[in-house]
Length: 496
Image (cartoon, rainbow, N blue to C red):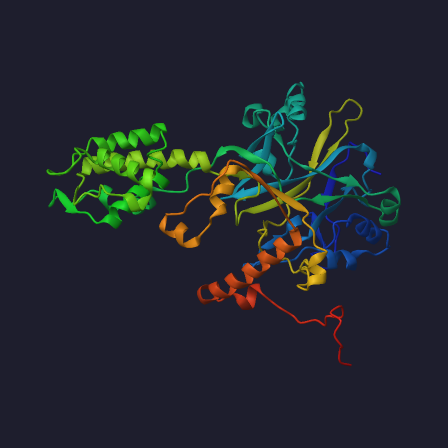
């Protein structure tokens, strides 16, 4: 077996589905979570090439881009490589010489290769890798401590190959572990194999929200007409109740002008500087919208009375000030509600994997890191797409009295007094016109239900809405497939 002083090559095993000299890591695909024993059983055969070829991941998009799945699809991926010396005969690598083996998942964006980084166990996010980390013959190591140790040496030739320390700022690139195949497998195949589960889902997220998903063009389209600059021909325009109500909704729901936030207060201050036309009950736009907001807050939109007949048309200076204030308010709202940027959340992003082996030092030599070529780029299938696996079956209870009598409550809801009073005299007509009356009494309730019955109710409601919305989406042939089956437990005679 090869020693540390020799050049080492990491490659995927040759299979029928790939070129004989394809050195990229092999990505296998299985339909069961307990797939490692199956892989090792395959590798114990003298010629596993055909079985590996059948298991090779090969689902592709219309653009022929490789698609890999998440565990939620009940599809699992395994990375498989072997390591050998590049000298004639390619003697296999002694697995005892491997200090660490792993696989990194990298994102490829506009030609840049990015790694998912941590600093002191805290996620940093996707970071552009230095040029040395992305090239074929790389000396880069995911561990910042290993990189730092290499920079402490006195060999200028080795130091010239190491990436500058300040480029990665002691960040650690996240990797998944790989494991050496059992000795009998390596003996049968005369190769040292390394394998590991390729997990393409993660709870980690980059700190802070991403960039706000709106630009100036979208902002200009979203701002109500009453806050936009006019053509300069008119100082005021007529206002309808519907248009004024839409303005209030925008200020309240989108911009958060009445939340008390710094950005919301600034937006109201900008509106306070715009005077209302002569004859208005309030002196400024800000005063009008604040009064109207109080009316809506007190009695609902049906109690809105302060609808001005005329509205001032902002000049270009005021319109720009409004736009800046609205943008700041929307950005602040985005920071409050923005989802975290998950590791694999970017839909349509392309990724690749690379396998590394950290080889132990020998005879005074430091450890070194050997990399495989990058894999074929791939996309991660969104959770909502089908993987082709059989659907999960959920059995619903029968609707006869005998079956229903066996369904006892197995979940309980603790209902506070305020919610109970709101639900006690629930009437849909009163809810729609805002005149719903609450119940009486200051006591809560504990309400028990049966989960299968809740599931049955949800199923019935689902059937109703699927049919109702079919006139919009025409989706029934795709989202609902009902196949009859004989009900042998119903007690009725069956035909033979």
